[in-house]
Image (cartoon, rainbow, N blue to C red; front, side, top):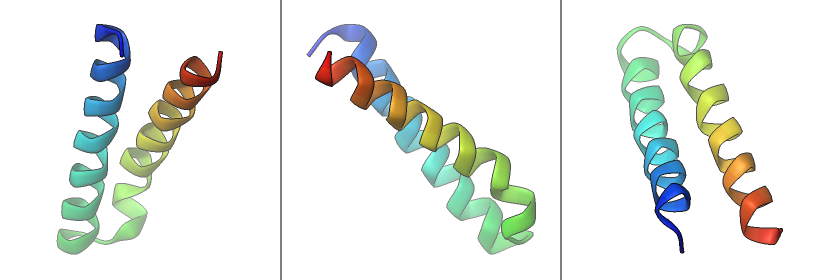
Length: 51
């Protein structure tokens, strides 16, 4: 795994943690942005992995 892939995966996990925290504190509608950023990072990671 390259450094950029590790950074992508780490950022995705960080945004998942942020999304879970925000959804517990203020609700899912306020954490939707963090869920979408995490999904985007996971998709980019998977795309780079398969390529």
